[in-house]
Length: 70
Image 1: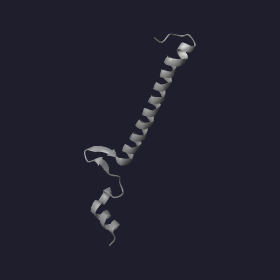
Image 2 (image 1 turned 180 degrees about the vertical axis):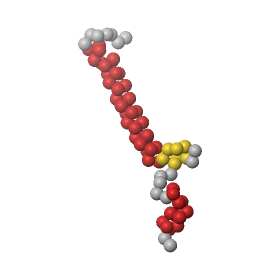
Image 3 (image 1 turned 90 degrees about the horizontal axis):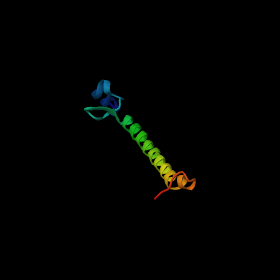
Image 4 (image 1 turned 135 degrees about the horizontal axis):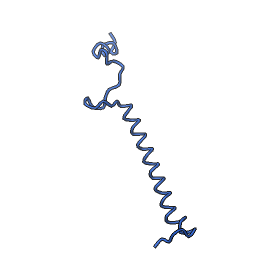
């Protein structure tokens, strides 16, 4: 009997299903990876927005005379 058959018999209905990260947390490893990708992308978008606001406040606004940076 092969190892996969023994594992299938041991796991029963759970065979082939993804494991949860923790037994008490109903999130699979694939869902955790997807959440990681989304939050990383969101962080980079936030960094880009912050840089654009900084350039506007420090360079563009004063260059067009909208306000003075002191």
